[in-house]
Length: 213
Ligand SMILES: C[S@@+](CC[C@H](N)C(=O)[O-])C[C@H]1O[C@@H](n2cnc3c(N)ncnc32)[C@H](O)[C@@H]1O
Image (cartoon, rainbow, N blue to C red; front, side, top):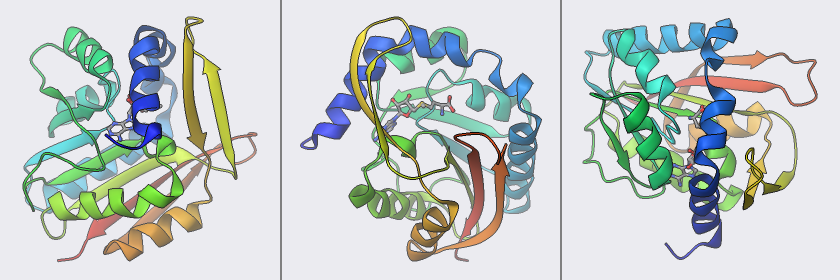
């Protein structure tokens, strides 16, 4: 793990895992458009033949759980061992493992879908093309990827976690057009773009794309 951003991100989520998990508890219940995007994604997984789906940067695992409840064979991967421990605690019976989206421990064409909800936000620009190339490598041809992120420009540094713990993590905001360009360059075809609360200071966006057949 030579890049400082990865070790800083891992250590920060390790230090603040409990605080983050509490912060997002019940989030999907309050976010109908996010649930809708996951429903469309689940349908795309089924349409492409089904199979295992990786929730990359799964955090406390509630998206993995939601997908399982929607009939998708989802498992979670996260850089932070403490976050993975919380996901395992909160969702016993589901599969969660420590892993790095820049170098996924998954075989080529081995998964039927990839979800990355607000996890690529910590990946610096220079590393995003490599991450999307990894998603494309592990996906079966014609399978969907769903990427969620903060819309905007620039990078915010956070030095204090939800529990007051000292952390050091960068969060990158991006324009959807830029994320879609990176996805296209990695070999994906864009299927849909959804901007959430576009009048907020920091809107969210979800992009659904599919790997080449
Ligand atoms: C803002 S949280 C999002 C968690 C969850 N997906 C959600 O929507 O609540 C970002 C997560 O991405 C993980 N993460 C950051 N960089 C990663 C990497 N290189 N590989 C895997 N996970 C990573 C962090 O550990 C953290 O759990």
